Amino acid sequence: MNICGICSCASLKQHNKLKNYYKCDNCNTWNKLPRHEQNDLISGGYKYPDANDTFNSFSKFKPLILKFEKLVPVKTIYDVATGIGGLPYLAKLRKWDVYGGNELRIENVHCARMLYGINLDLDYFEDVKMEMKFGVVVCHHGLEHMNNPITVLDKMIDRTVKGGIIYLEHPCIPNDDYLERYADGSESLGAHSYEWTFESFKYFITCVRNMKQTKIIESKCGWETVNNLHAYIPPVQYWLLRKE
Image (cartoon, rainbow, N blue to C red):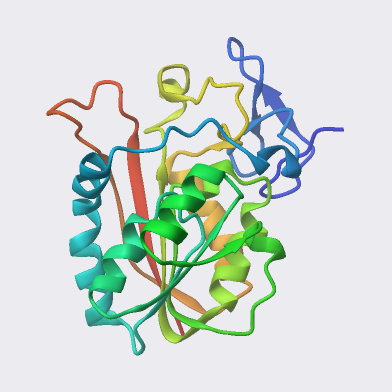
């Protein structure tokens, strides 16, 4: 039986056109079914990036690192979905202790570990055994790909020091009418498992905050502009949570 991966509700309604998307009657999250198997993601079709393009794409992280420095008690950071390593690399340049996780995508591992010298856990974040806690724990465009985002966010909060920051960023749709336009239609491994609106993600984040003592200190939803266009780029939302 299909159930919602966010709230475990068994009442899901299939989209009238996108037959692999099901909306939860309880939390309004769109679930993409069937979900991928966890160990399907060991390798990916990621193209090794051009070094100059890669470094230029890091520029969006610079103000974020500066914001973190004003907010946290210790300069340690863990990036749950490290990818090619942009955010922790820039933090490292500013003398942070940086760590990250990666789902064993070989090309990404080369960038993050070998090229940028990031301490990398080659496993799913839910399964990584760690005793250390961090000033900042980040998941930048990762939760929508994960089968168990509640478990991931719960662990992110747990691994954050008191007074530290949890940063989340992910694509969203303005409302259900936009699903056909912006839903991830890819059938490749690592495609989105969930699509959220701003309001449905608020439900998700509230569920986890009820389990842990955190405070939302900032949230924003808007359009990302690429080459002065946003017509085909879905809106993005981010959240800053403080561990109390």
